[in-house]
Length: 298
Image 1 (cartoon, rainbow, N blue to C red):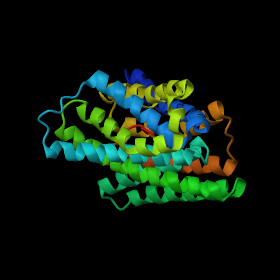
Image 2 (image 1 turned 180 degrees about the vertical axis):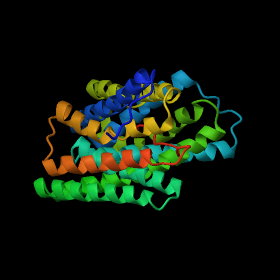
Image 3 (image 1 turned 90 degrees about the vertical axis):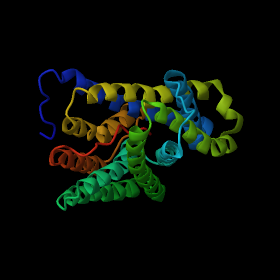
Image 4 (image 1 turned 60 degrees about the vertical axis):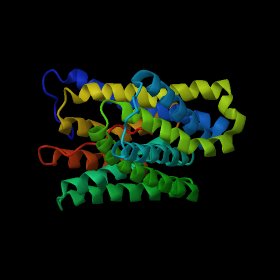
């Protein structure tokens, strides 16, 4: 078994992590439903703008008195957040949800291997690379070259996800509380808004877009952040990381149930390789474990 049995009393925390992962992927599935109305950039604009409003109302960050030492990492955090979500939604427009998340997962997995600075961790990255390569072959053979473009966008989103992890860690050390996250959400929304407005126009004000955008903002941001913060107080980082490794499989299941996205067996096998690589990297990490990636905020 890849996932060790949780210690007594950890059952609730395990459920929180799995619930966060399901919430994130359900939010992504709902976002895919908005694409015909507003396109990927319009969808990500609605999602980030509404998430920013919610976070500002809840957190009420006090930015007066912030120094450039604080503003710099927050701006980088917001830039990574906006770029990551935009490229992920561009991939989701072209390929199934499970495929997109699997390819995207290569970013934080590579970062984890680099942070541990152990040569043997490259084995797990190599295994994940094989999985992504098989994924590309399977998807390209079944649908067409557009799938490979989608996988390329997902890999780019994974690179921005790695940057998001580094930036969020830095923000956590220089900005108290969740103020940095709230301001970064505003920055991300402002970055994507010009393209979103230009491509979606008045569709952004359509009641359906606003309603579904609010659902995505809550499901992909508010709920998972809350659940994971609670879970991390009760679970060892290693257990948390292994549970997080199930996210590509959860994404594939969400795509199948919510979007009727079937996958060829070759793609299912590829997802299994990436899940195994991520879980293996977490289980073999030295103690104390390196920082694990937060749930996919895309």
